[in-house]
Structures are given as C-alpha cells and as structure tokens.
Image 1 (cartoon, rainbow, N blue to C red):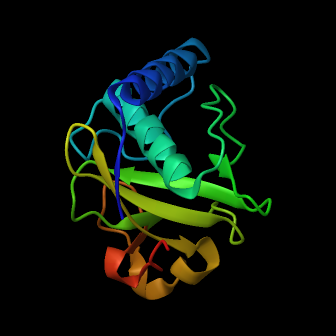
Image 2 (image 1 turned 30 degrees about the vertical axis):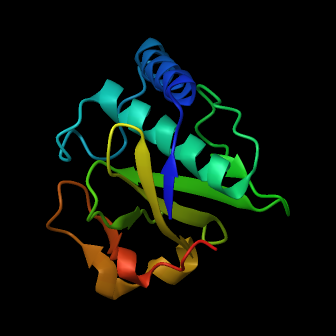
Length: 156
C-alpha cells in the first residue's frame, strides 16, 4: 500500500529523525544494529525511520507521537491498543528484519521508501511468526531474521 507524505509531514518526520540521532549521540547510545550496512548514515537512518513511522500512522489513521529517546516504547499504538513497530528499508525490495529481542506479540510493519515522499507499506507480521530458523542469517553484518516481504500480511 503506497503512502505519500505531504511536504510538511516530511519536514516534521525529518526533524524528529534528526533529534533522535542527536539524542543518541548525547546519551552515547551506540547503534544496536546495521552499523551502516544499508548505505545510510546514522542521521539518514533515523530520518527514514521517522518518516516510515509517520507513513504507517497515516495509513492506519492512528496518532504518531514522534517520541525521542524512548527506545523501549512501541513506535505506534494501534486503535485496539496493540503495540505496532515499524521497520524501514531504503529500497523497494527490502526484507522485514527481526531480532531475537523483539517482543513476539508486537506487530511489525515493513516500509520501503520508493521516492522522495512515497513509502510502500509492504505488509506486517507478528514477531513470533517471523522468528523462524529458516529466516535466520548469520552471514549478515548483524545476525537477524530476514523475512521476505512476500510473506508479510497485506495491509487492508
């Protein structure tokens, strides 16, 4: 499902992303995963993440708080109170990446950037459903579960 953010929405999410990286630097919090393997620097990664969160919130018609420095909270809260997490990729053919520490009951959305303002919300999966040995990769820059987008549930 393609979501287009307005330029004011892009500006808001970009500011949140920059503030998140500044918060991480201030708190001397290292990058837990990725380490630049996807070609994005830390500021770009936080900006893309914030933009992707806003795209999912817009699609689902739920509030996006754009929190900064509260990394243990979910990215969004669904209308029925469920914890929603957003994983973003900078290219359209990305996979949903899950980590062993991800809560099994959280619903994870895969969002792929497709243009300057457009984002493909490719689907979602409960973490428990994606943490299968067949998706585990040790040969990645950070070992994790890599689930093909085609296995995610469509967003209706």
